[in-house]
Image (tube, rainbow, N blue to C red; front, side, top):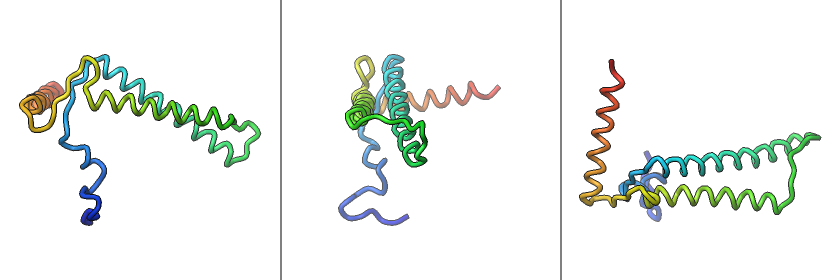
Amino acid sequence: MSAPHKSIPHDNAFDVLRKSHGVILTERETAHISTALQGIHTIAAILQQRELDAELEDDSTLSFGPSVAQGLISALATCAKYAEGIVDTGGIAGQCAIHDTPAYAELEAARWRVLEANRKGATP
């Protein structure tokens, strides 16, 4: 692996986000994130289909004006920002724990207990 660039002190984009916080999400927050991600996938698929149709110069090309494209891109950004807000804060009913705090240690311990319980439940 190459060394990180001196102006970017991380090996990859994920290192920036690691060990900042952890969240516990309720069913509601999980549903909200899932819905936002579905919106992102749908809008991305619409934009991708438009580009593919334009490239193939198909008579049935999906077309719309610049204001519709800008609206879709704005909706895409809104969905991403909404999901990011839930992950950053734990949402309305969820909980957030900052790294290196007692709450984060509890969250990490609970994660290991859940992993162990899932492992035991997966084996007959």
